[in-house]
Length: 216
Image (cartoon, rainbow, N blue to C red; front, side, top):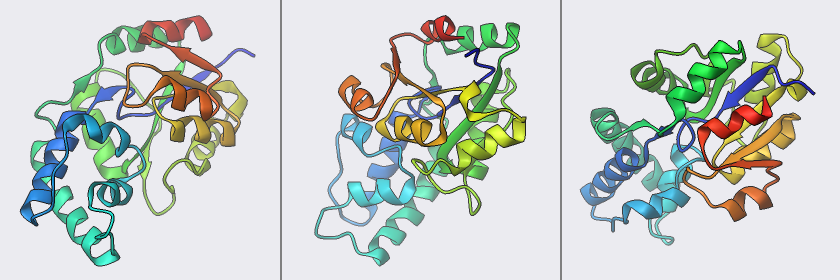
């Protein structure tokens, strides 16, 4: 199979957003008197949408809907003010994207961030490259691992899902890829472990962005 497109996850795959997400979540927790967490702990909280992030960050005995929604609203406000402070593309991502463009391989993004903000952050840090489409979570695109967003993207490009490499850093991404019928590629520079990626069904693992080129 010759792959004609690459569908990328965003956080932990193209962009290192860990510090800004951790800082804003900790500020939100502190605002309401809840314990905060080391930055590295957020590697295992991020990736499944805002509500899941907030639920995981709160104490186990205080995860009622009202509290989660209150902290989520605070997190949106906090993150909205600092999202570009420390975020940056991972080393090697610009070179990979340059080469994919030269080879005329279509590139797309599917994120569990809210759709509007997904577009804003891509425009800020990745505007040099063309991603079509860019899709985040919205009323028509449930969060991953639901494969609906990935399937919609394939349909929009007029390709079969089997013609896509799906590149992500988490078990959620690998599950999404398999459910959509895409080829799941796990990246080892992101937020999650090699073991998680393998367990979730990764068919290939790459240590550096440029390693993806061996698959296309």
